[in-house]
Image (cartoon, rainbow, N blue to C red; front, side):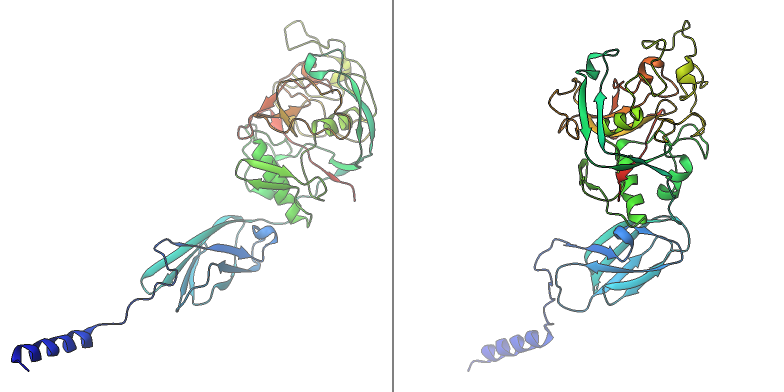
Length: 374
C-alpha cells in the first residue's frame, strides 16, 4: 500500500477519535416550546398572602435533563422537576415566570399573572323575584319604545348598593376612580374591567364564573352561579320594583329637564337620587337616599351603572319579551340609571340614551352586580 494511503487512513482515525457526540434537539424544531403555568390557586389566578400554592410548568414531552428557572417577582428558585411550592408574603399582583433550559439552551418560557388579596368583600344582596313589567316609556325618546310587557324568568340576587371603591380594591387591588372615597361608588372602570371583577369575585367566593373572556370577546354562561352584570331588562325591572312611573316614587315634574338654570329640585327625585340639582356634580357615599320597595339603593342617580347589553342605536325589538339580552353584537355597551351629572330626563327608570366602548371608562359610570338566586 502506498505511504500516502497510510497517512490518509491515520488522519481519518484521528479525526474520528476527536469527534464529540451530536447535541440532542428535544423539540425537533428551532422554535421555542409553549410553556403553560398551572397552579392550585382558585381559578388559577386568585390567591391569599402567606399561603402556599403549587405551581407546575406544563409543556410537550422533552428528552434529557431539564432545569426550570422560576421567578415570582420577589423571589427566584431553580428546580429539576416542573413543580414548585411558593407562598407570597404580601397582597399584590405578581407575574410568575418560568424558563425551561437544557444545558445552555433555552427551550421555552411561560408566565402567569396572579392576584394575591385578603378575604373578598361580602356584598349585601337583595332578592329580585321572577316576574313581568312594562318596559320602556312614552314620556321619553324613541329608544325607550315600544312599551311592552317583558318577563324575567329567573329569580336573582342583586347588590343592594353600587359597588364601592373599597369593595373594588379588595378584589382588584387599586381603584381607577377619579373621585376618591372609600364609601363612594367605584367609577372610571371599563366594561371589560367590570366583567373581570365579576369573575374574580365569583372565584374568591367559590362560585362558578359567568364570563368566558378571550381577548376582547366575552361570552356569558347564564346558568352559572357567579356574579355578572344585569341585562338592561333585569336592571329596569329591578329599578322599577313593581312600579310603572318615571321613578319608583312617582312621575317626576320635569321629565325633560337636562340641568338648565330653570330646573328646580324635583321632590320625587330628591328623595331617592343624587343628580345634577342636588349632588354638587360629585358622586356621594352609597346608601344615603331612600331605597325602592325591593331594598335597592341608588338605582337612580349617583353613578350610572353598566349592563350587559350591546347598543346598536336602535329602539327595542317588539317581540323580544322573554329575558331580553339585547343585540348579539355592537360597538358599545349600555349603562343605565343616570348619574350625579344628569338631569331628570336621564334619571327616569326607562331612560337609555347612553353607551360606552367596552375598553373606555367614564368618571360617572360604575356598576352593580347580580347572580342567580340559589
